[in-house]
Length: 165
Image (cartoon, rainbow, N blue to C red):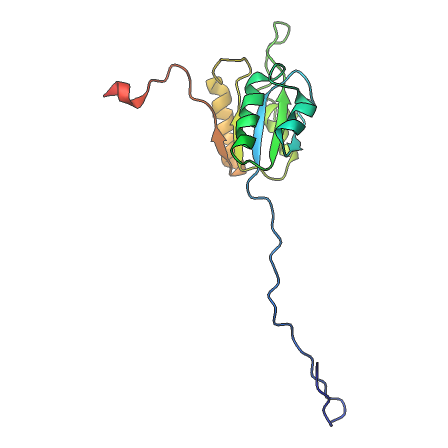
């Protein structure tokens, strides 16, 4: 408590000695882009559990590669994920959902709608297939712009390093 001084017009105010905590912000947001049969198309959705994923995008039967990837994320301690659903290949469409259009914010460019993500995981648009090299290149350039890391399964044709020795 400030003490009173005998001089008029002179005041003493005590300053706080405590440290003010720094408000935390998310620094580990993982984005998943892949095919699912249901859920919002090209609209990033923030989820915090596999149950929440299933309520929006379906189970392993409706989104096999995407479901498995998101399940592994949460099984290994992941806290927050952004999920973008893209279209599956169709004989009636010339293109798939990846890489997408930056102008229309589709495919991986749907992530333009979010402020931040630190890791981008792409799943193949066809179960068991590789991510096409053109999609890989677009995703890599986009991650460099957004200062994020890119995670994609290697092509099946890659040989282990031990086979080259």
